Image 1 (cartoon, one colour):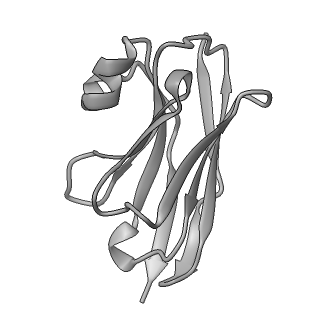
Image 2 (cartoon, rainbow, N blue to C red):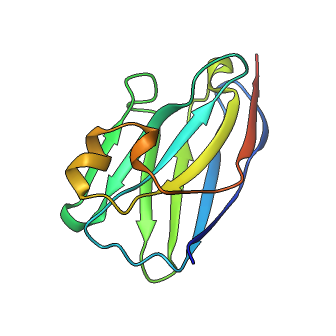
Length: 127
């Protein structure tokens, strides 16, 4: 049974930093992806950052490129999202997700290509 638990959300002023963590248990798909998604009120869930550790591939949405960094600590089965220079438009619920699909499908695909989700953690950025 795969279980994902996020932590690290909270309130921060614009220009500040936050680090989100996702502790994974039971996840053993080495040729697949994990990632961070977010959903703001009234908006669709969107991809923020994806990681395929098998080939050290990372994807970032244009809106966060250069500000956010996704990483994994395989020894601790934990994924991170370092958020720097945050903006009010980064305000959303952030979800950790894991896939069993072949890496190309989850690396390039939507939330539909992810099987397991965490409960979400709120990030609020004030101006």
